[in-house]
Image (cartoon, rainbow, N blue to C red):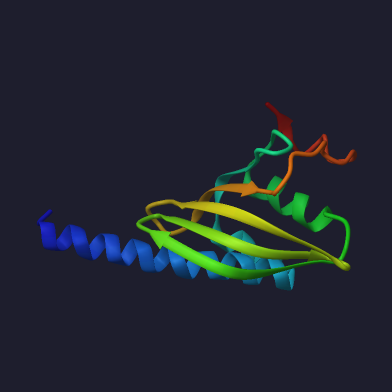
Length: 137
């Protein structure tokens, strides 16, 4: 592959990553589970370092989100993409409570999300009731 072709590929990957990151937040916010499913690889991995939880697989990740309690809302404040990676700074609201969260997305060569790392401001113990969906590390 020539240098020019490689640069075009990086630009295409970056544009795809940026669009995918915006779509990820939009689909979560609208609770569009079938749309979100189409954005993820079958073997997507979702990690939350603050609770040391990991979810493996699209179906389990979707169930985690559909079962998540509260009237939560997401709004992207910043999206940065580079190649097959995107980082999001999110305004997260549950009722009157507001938090900032950082989310890192990694894309497959086909532009689908294959890894999500969700960083919250403070470590916390995970709520009970989701043990069947996650593994702890």
